Amino acid sequence: MKNYLFPIYLVTAFLIVYVTSIQANLNTGLILFMFSISPIPILWMVYRVLTADVEVTSTFEDKWYEDQ
Image (cartoon, rainbow, N blue to C red; front, side, top):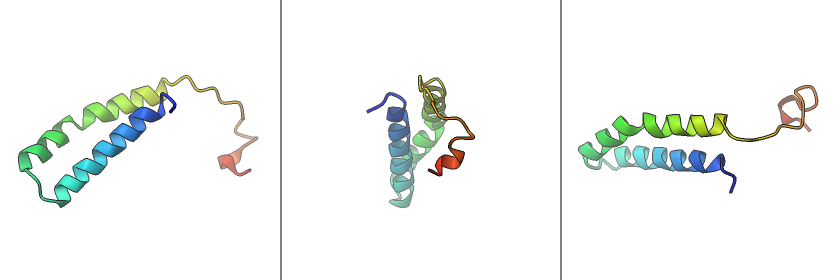
């Protein structure tokens, strides 16, 4: 797995667990705790994706919205 994809999968899993815990009406303390720490994984994910060492070889004119 590529390094920049791991934070995306982890934060998406966190979001799914959070939404599922709300729908399942789990402990309110757990839901509020997850809500309060939610900016930390999101900021971590954004930082990791933006600083990823990915080399783009195509230009915007070559692949307009990846329409090939």
